[in-house]
Length: 355
Image 1: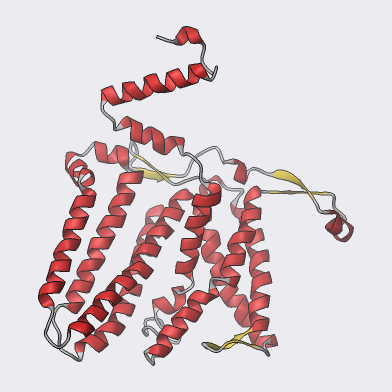
Image 2: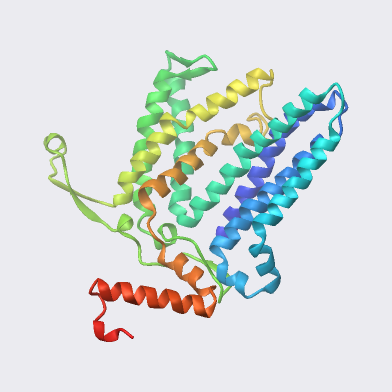
């Protein structure tokens, strides 16, 4: 299942990249200049090679250690990535045509901005997925929920225009979508937090050659009792409430999905207006392209990754152990002696164990 999500994210990334690049190609192609489309796809391969190579090195260390050919690729991964990119850079310079320099540099920048929007963000989606399926499903579902409920509230109650870039968006839909998304995120998080499959970090088991989601759930996913604020006690009639700590974090995720996430859609609307197009593509009849459906998801992916690294993630013993296991024996022994000395000084180990 994890592999399915992995491939699904990759396929969406490639399609979104294709849709944006195609818009630039229509402009570029009219001047009959060489190599733009070929170089665009080459740079996509280079950047994906770099990011997914980093993922393999980070999460599949024990698997890599068993295969000598992969050891070489991982050891020199960043150098190989840079060399591949450098080759593309040189090809671009060689493709420059007199009288069209400015346009070619426009397209070079176009390609790199597109890579930033699609590849970098999809890589963060994969990183979030490895933190636990719940960090993947709740944010994505919250954006979808906000999109649907904002439309419903806007359709039935919308009167006040929200932003000129999207004339159909209304304040009523925006506000209704916010409250609906917060409630949805809170309830959806409650159900997911009960299942180990959704809350455990995704890890690769080198013995079975499979992804596993088995662990002792962290404190985020263990039911706790909270005191209800006095103001709400009179309304609800409860002094305490039992809930998962993650549900508190779902408020932050839902708030971003409903208040800031739509600005990804506004940005896409402005982009399309700039090029006088209705949709990025016609992949989905009546709904435009894949990018039209995922314009808000990329902002969300970045926020979730930043949120996890800033407020959630602590030292990962499992990942640290994997890194220790690939060290040379003398390096492992040095780490062992340093750690034992440290534990003795803190009184965790008895001094008699020294030596």
